[in-house]
Image 1 (cartoon, helix red, strand yellow):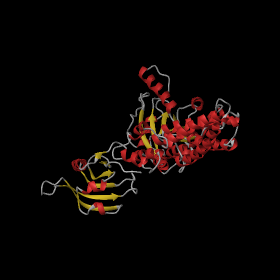
Image 2: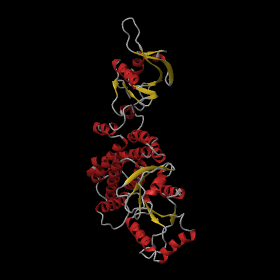
Image 3: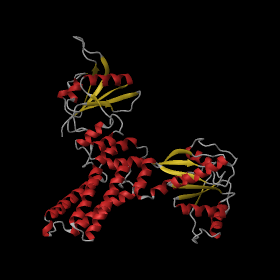
Image 4: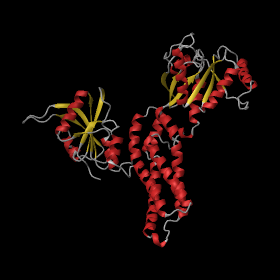
Length: 474
């Protein structure tokens, strides 16, 4: 590891605030900052220490430079810092003018303004963590729910990448033996025991495939659970949306077909972000604009991870419910049946609805068991049980559990899928008794894909693509 030229950037969010932190990292970062700092001599101070003083403009002749701000400077010495380089963090007042003046002074002294993600890139290049962990830094910063934070933090701490690196190293050892066989091709020798090689490859697949399968859940964790509220006009969908959000987001009217477009907002329940989508009522209509809204509703059902079917408990017939259950079953989407206006009908009437559906034949496939119906009053905001059900519906997915390794990054999915495909071909080649050169070809592909995933195999273009998406100062 070696230190690069010093770079500097604002590490806190831009804008006016009580405090701003400016980070300087690289060879000579401490001495460079010392030239503008008046307090203790920073060069002689140990790492992980903080020092109060003033940050100043350049001296003018015999006159000392004017004060830019009173600051608190924290010193970190290599390799015990985020970048593993010498690092100085300057805490100043959160004035945009002060921040500009301090950064200008640092560049006058020889620092370069950092590119987006350059601090994290240096940490990766200096071996602080692998590429998966480096990408998780951005995800931790962007996390806006407990679930997304938990997933990002798991990857930042190593998650699945450390285990994959260990398995990759074992595979490298086997590939070396297979390659050695190629050097003795005419002598028909076998250095790599095929049963051991096959066992290792299937072990790697046993780690990779659950990660590939976790991407759907991981994407939901990262971006929120797309939850579409559907039902006939005047079932109370907009009222329910307003009750869930605790605000008047959607227009509520007794006139059928008021909602003609998709309305979206976000709701956090037990640390999970739900992207709630209120839709136009499902019905046959001759109104051109309303028909477009109905078509969009069906498009939203296709995109949804969870569907809430809301029906009017007073007016919906068992046959209408049965038809909707059949349509939802056919869609393959997880769904919740919600009966509205529970404040206007008795418990006996609610039970009668379920009985009537069952007597009408249940599902068309002959199964008489119908999904449980959750009764609410959207108008009176009696929806606590619905919130609990939404949370429980998501948490039944194992990937949502604390500690589970989850893939949330499309780049990771791409490399994991390519690795699994290469290993599947290699396993098939071993089973068929194929020659070593064909096996070696697929093993090399698997090694390259795993290496690109964790950063053991990189290109400048790859690193630029990844770290350019980071914020400046990180």
